[in-house]
Image (cartoon, rainbow, N blue to C red; front, top):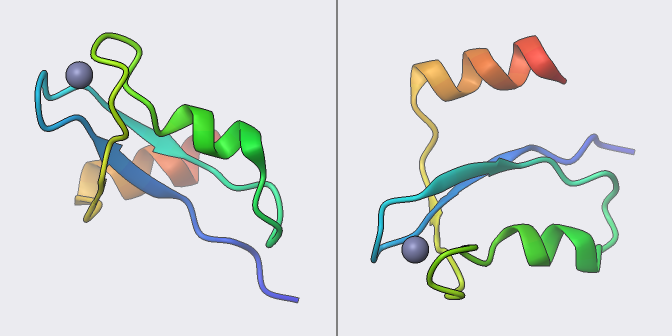
Length: 61
Ligand SMILES: [Zn+2]
């Protein structure tokens, strides 16, 4: 079983971004809600992770 990779999403409207860490391979509704911008209520598309993002993920997970 492979561990699901975390990914970053960013709002195209207000530039709010967050990192989503899926808990399992199954699609979790909680992960989906994390992809919605709390300000604009828009679904945020995935964006490539930068070096800093990868560091934060490794440090906090
Ligand atoms: Zn937004």
